[in-house]
Amino acid sequence: MYRGHPNVVPVASKYLAHKEYIQDRMEHKQNIKNAQGLIDLSSPPERAHCYQRIKQKKIKEYELAIIERENARLRTKMLQNGAFVKTHNSYETH
Image (cartoon, rainbow, N blue to C red; front, side, top):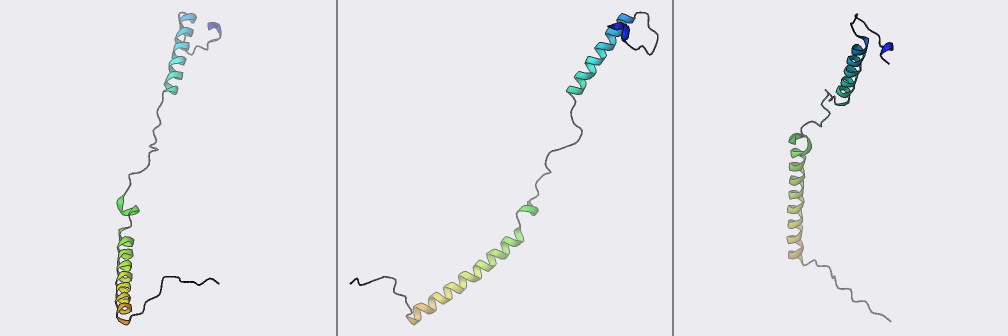
C-alpha cells in the first residue's frame, strides 16, 4: 500500500512517490545481487625461486656425483682384487 510509504519530502502524488520508491528499492536489490567484490581473492603469481629450490638441487647432484665416483672407485678395486660374491645359490636338498 502506498499510504504507508514514508515521504521525506512533500510530493504531489503519494501513489507515484510509492511507485518510484518501489522501483528504486527493486533496482537497489538488483544492484546488491549483481555486486562484485573489491578484494582480489586470486592466488599470488608463482615465483620460480621459491618452489624450485635450485641450490638444494645442485647440492644433491653434487652429493650423488661423489657417491657415483666412490662406487666406481670401489668397483675397480674389487675387480682388481678378484673379490666376487657368488650370486648363484646352489643349495643341496637332502
